[in-house]
Length: 284
Ligand SMILES: Nc1ncnc2c1ncn2[C@@H]1O[C@H](COP(=O)(O)OP(=O)(O)O)[C@@H](O)[C@H]1O
Image 1 (cartoon, protein in one colour):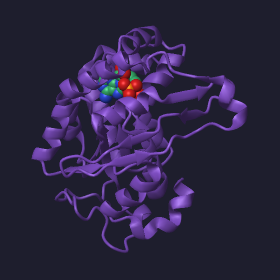
Image 2 (cartoon, helix red, strand yellow):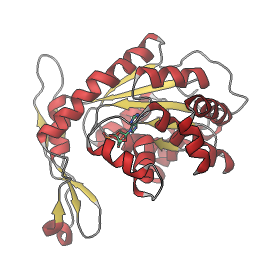
Image 3 (tube, rainbow, N blue to C red):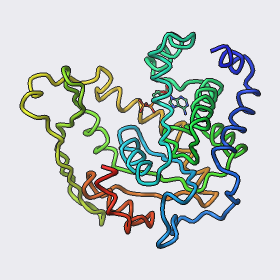
Image 4 (cartoon, rainbow, N blue to C red):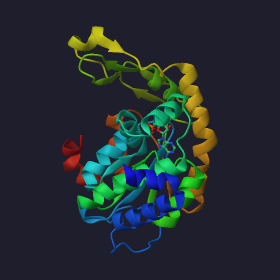
């Protein structure tokens, strides 16, 4: 913890640690390559034999965590979600926990220094376990963070997951947790009619088993006002990150065609990973 305090007092040392960790995570054989949006993986290539340095972007509630986590299993690289790092720190008895609780409760973004030091610490721990590559989820969240990331490593591909705003809101409002077993469900049944040439979409609810039905609760912050405020913060602070990567030719826009059963095979297809679908069940 002393090391973290030192990092927080000195943002530049936090950056240099991030630089060291990220460049190690990138593995030395990785060459600066042209972005390969249409062929992220060469046909026939073993996905686990490739160093992956990917970023997942998308509005709150789009399902970044779900798809990033499935891909991390498939590709054998860690899925690093900065929101999880923040929550872990917040739930610890560390010196930052009170400060983080306040920031997160106010739905503000944590400072770059704190996020970088949490990310560095996570990468350093991964490095010690022999990890290489990463799928980042929730970082970068601002153009400044994207610029810092650019200084310290080569991001190869940025996947931007998209859903219509009305679907995002309905999905967030449909979230339920079983107060007894802690499992997540979603009672929203999405049926969006196609309009002006755009296809319709439907997503089946993820209903709980009978023993959980009477114990379902919603997160206090899953109200329409809060969800819309989180979307507003995303459009304000994080949408410019999409433009940042678009101008570098690294952005893969992916309009989710529906729920996981429709979207996962299509995502694998655009990533050239569909021939590895024998591993789908392992990743599920
Ligand atoms: N890259 C980041 N920069 C700043 N703050 C972050 C970042 N990642 C996560 N956080 C903080 O952690 C909280 C939880 O993150 P996450 O689960 O990704 O977001 P949300 O709950 O808003 O979908 C965010 O509200 C924010 O306060």
